[in-house]
Amino acid sequence: MELEVKGIAASPSQTQPFSGRKKPLRQGWTSRSWAIQNPCLPVVPRLDLASLIDSADEDDFSYVPLSTAHIYFNPPNSSAFGWVTPCRIPYTQRLGELEQDVIPENLPAPTDKYKLKYQQYETEMKKAYKQYSQRKAEKAKSNVTHQQSPRKRINDECVQGEEVIMGDLTTLDRKALLQQGYADNRYSAQRSTRKSDAEIVAAEKKKQTVAEQVMIDHLSRAVISDPEQNVTIEKEESASVLPDARRAPLRFRRRALHETKIRTHSTLTENMLSHKVQFDGRIISRNGHDACRELIGFFFTHDQSLTVYEYRQFGKNRTNVLPFIQKNVYSHQRGRRKGKQYQLGDFYIGGNLTFLSSDHPRLPESIRENTLLILRITNIDQIALDSLKADSVEREDDITSQEASDKLVLKAVQDMLKEQLRNRGVRILTGLGKYLQQLDKEGNGLLDKADFKQALKVFHLEVSENDFESSWLILNGNGNGKVDYGEFKRAVIGEMNEYRKSFVRKAFMKLDFNKTGSVSIIDIRKCYCAKEHPQVISGHSTEEEIKSSFLETLKDACSKSDEVSYGEFEDFYEGLSIGIADDEDFVNVLRIPWGI
Image (cartoon, rainbow, N blue to C red; front, side, top):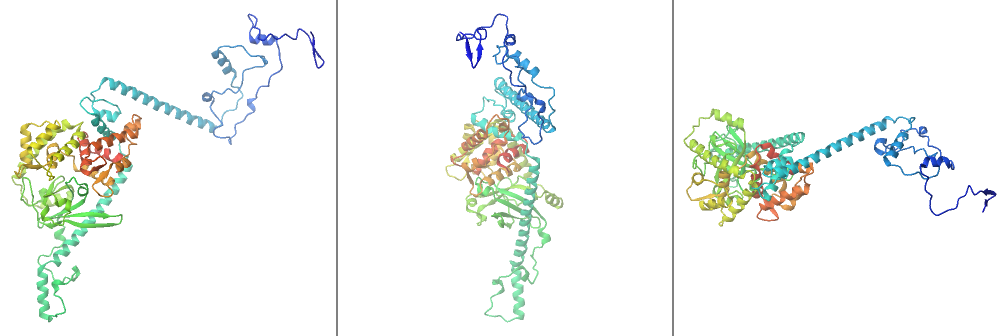
């Protein structure tokens, strides 16, 4: 049947009946050859990319490098295909055909702006890939080390970010030693210099203020309180002026230094007071408020007298310089030198000055609870000390050799215990402090020989019988059979130097802004920063993991679960200090997380 559409006749050769499915191509025919034999309507003309010109006003994201975006601007030549669906060919073959025809030769060159963008993009991609490769290599190395050397030292774990399982260490030890990782992260030199300069200026200003107050106090008191002045002036007045009943005697009047009319024989001069040694000191105490007092002392060579002042700051602008130990001649209250007067040789960094609390009724109640007040010299004017020693005629006595022998005995015991405490010092020292405090039923800080032996046995600290007996004879100098357990720990186990302890006190003072002597765990969590820990930087741990490890080990040292006392805070870093040889490495452990 012939069809006619709008006057156009359709022949049977041009129309084919619809069978419901496509007929397969004849054997040997391809879609291209079949399309040649069956032409169709013309296709959309090709896009002329040469007419496109780059504009400097285009958006920054309008240009994408061809090699990275894989965009093909020129479609395959379809003029011969017509509207017929081509047959399926392999993807690689088709991609090759596309890449041959995709980039026209007449494309304009990209502008300098886009060249620069592409270079930056390429540099960033290379850097990111390099960092990714390094992290991947470190992770693979960590896994190999974990399998091959499970007994490697925990210090390498902290520095290299490797999680090494130590057979002789507990989980608490490994978490505590994570803090040693800060030692490998050097503190910013510029920031450190700026801070240290400001601290030096502030410290010098404090010392100058205290020195001026000392000179004023002693010069004024020496003149006004001299009894000769009253006697001489009263004689002069009685000779020239008749007594007046309405006028009070001169000795009861309020007088100032400028009202002094005579020069008495016992009057001090500024030149006499200038021959002195100035030193900084701290109170050896587990009470945080007392341990953090800023004390500045003076030893005067003209009369061998000693005085100590406290520098106190109230708010930002108000400061006070108050006498802590009145100027007087003092002597040792314990040890080999008990009863001997203080001399120049007793003043050095790390030296102890002992006083009877009963002799100083104006001391705070927390200090007068103890029989002895022990001051530790933390810093000293070495130039003035050397100058005064050169002019001094003091002779060394036999006690010096005995003290040197005692120090050698204690040093040997300390060295032996230090090896046992190197990797588990935090757990042992904090636990030992709590244990000795529990044994102190009377609360006076004194324990007998059996208590100390039992404590060493409980914490597996091996000390030979001879070494223990020698140490006990040195510490129990008064022969009463009891020793302060804080002194026992310091003498037998040892302690960090004053430079390190100054940073421990500085960190605690930053946390204890109310000066109560204890800090809540909540405040510690807020102030502790783990962003610069090496394991956080390398991606092996998160900030929260490092912070939780620190708080867990610190809580284990505390008698109360919600707060940390100064003694417990100091014990934690005392144990950590044993495994760190360099002072600056230990200071970084405090500087970086606490920002001091």
